[in-house]
Image (tube, rainbow, N blue to C red):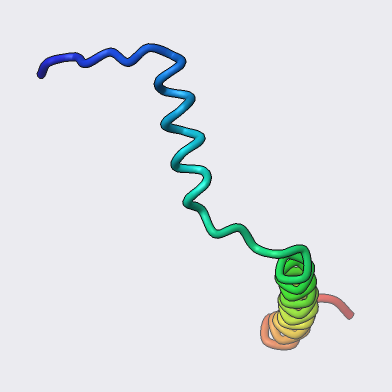
Amino acid sequence: MASKTTNPFTFLQQVRGETAKVTWPSRRETMISTVMVLVFAVIAMIFFFAADIAMGYAIEAILGLGH
């Protein structure tokens, strides 16, 4: 394979041109997405905590461990 080198100035111009093509989210869209991620993370945390507690009780009941 032939190695094609680009000088740093040309590279930065190309990066700037590509960055201008990106559709960036608005502040509102970013905040809504952030809140949604946090809400779903809390929901997942509650679910897995409850599942862990339930499985712990079930295993104690099945194996007769504990009291």
